[in-house]
Length: 286
Ligand code: GUN
Image (cartoon, rainbow, N blue to C red; front, top):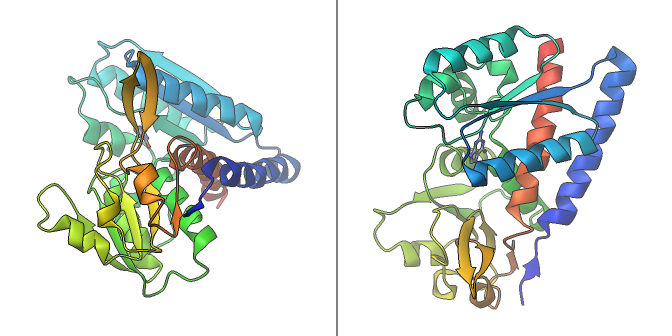
């Protein structure tokens, strides 16, 4: 049976570090690190994510401001709010929850956030800095996956890593971080040929395709490490349940280590968001 990579326990360690950083920023600079979360519309999944982020923030002593905007908000109205948050010295991090309603252009919204307040690491300057291997604000989910991998592997150098999925939020930054850690990285996606045999050669598989139970036991080399980024809501016997992109029961018979859903990547993502908020403060002090 595979070792379980417990994202809940590991995120508690990260949050403890964040709380210590928050206390230092208060003691040394009299700063209350503050995160502004912007939610446009009433998507129920997004509402849950935002609520969880704010709850965790307050637990580690990070201040938060919630901006709930009407689903019909215009590009100009959102731009005005972001401009106000950009110039507010008491706001250190800005997160605009995605996806946005169809009338809003996500790319220009992301580009309007000040790069030093971009706690998602989605701004083109931060994306470029990560691609170039420079120190920057890094997307939260891949960052959380790296902390999980470092729990299992004392040295990632030379490992074959396959990232299944090529999103801007997970797949692409994940590949960049693995490359920075000297892995040999392959990005697989819906058009990839022989994806199963490709994965079977990997020491590390990151499943971030957004397809339930896509990764099966036959995809996995015995002893490999499997990180499941998928969050798929299903209903069984009238009960709502979250499952990942990995067929957990079957794969855990083959893998050396595996992260569960829920209780895996999800809590790590939130912990890294709060870690990025304290890092954003440091960047604004510099
Ligand atoms: N929607 C789904 N994941 C994310 C994320 O990491 N950040 C933001 N802002 N929105 C999301």
